[in-house]
Amino acid sequence: MALALRRFAASFGYPPHFQCVRALSPLRFANSCSSFVSCDSSEDGVGADHPEFRKWHNGGGSFHKSACIDPTVFIEFGAVVHSKSVVGEHSHIGSGAVVGPCVTIGQSTKIGYNVALSNCSIGDSCIIHNGVCIGQDGFGFTVDEHGNMLKKPQMLNARVGNYVEIGANTCIDRGSWRETVVGDHSKIDNLVQIGHNVVIGKSCMLCGQVGIAGSVTYDLPLLAVSRKILQNLEIMAASQLFRSMSGEDKLQTTVEHQKS
Image 1 (tube, helix red, strand yellow):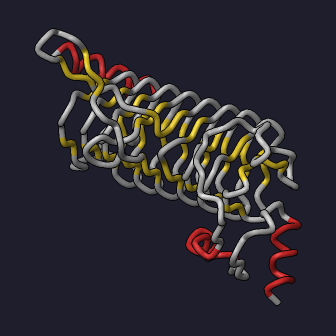
Image 2: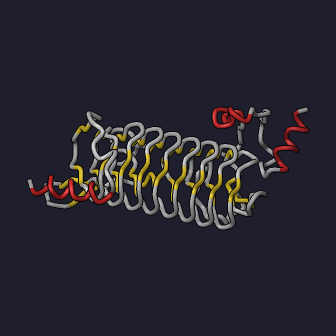
Image 3: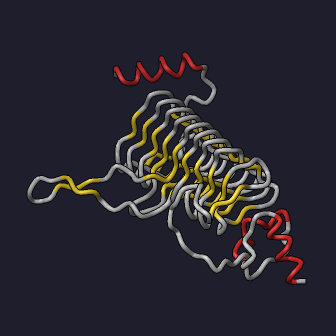
């Protein structure tokens, strides 16, 4: 039986030295990847032409042999899944996308073209549109006694919940002192910047060109276009502000508020 399971795994590109392969329930894949144990634990960060990268059977993309990928996943040509990443069933990764080491992607999630994912987890049934970057370092620096700018460590992750949609070219930084979080069912427009350590609640909506500085906690139903939120604020859901307005009304209300 063990030999048959190893052959089955090898047919999907897993290396022959996998020590343990268990049958997976379709709804339990993301929680079961710990049952795949590889002898290889290197995180060399090499490109897709390295011998440890292989061609995925469904779509022609590349994956590292230590990645844990459900057989139903579609990885388009030109996409790369790096070492120790996990991709759940029926997910789709578009051409040019890079799934960095140790990234987790849930079930039925669509990753668009040229998306860059690192130091993050993406939930189930999400849509990540073209050009999104998640998990890169936040903008954190300090000044030493000589006036030199020194980079602050950015060591934590970004965590995106279930049923989240993120618009094209939006950036979400990884955390420094706490994880950056986007709650379940939240929707984010194109060209939004979410700084490190920000926590976005459930079912929030951020419209285009919104910028949220580091360490903000935000839980309002809707943030209108072109707003900037400063550091270390906490904004909780106390009203249904802007929810029923048209786009023109939102913009006019925002301008009038700024004038006042």
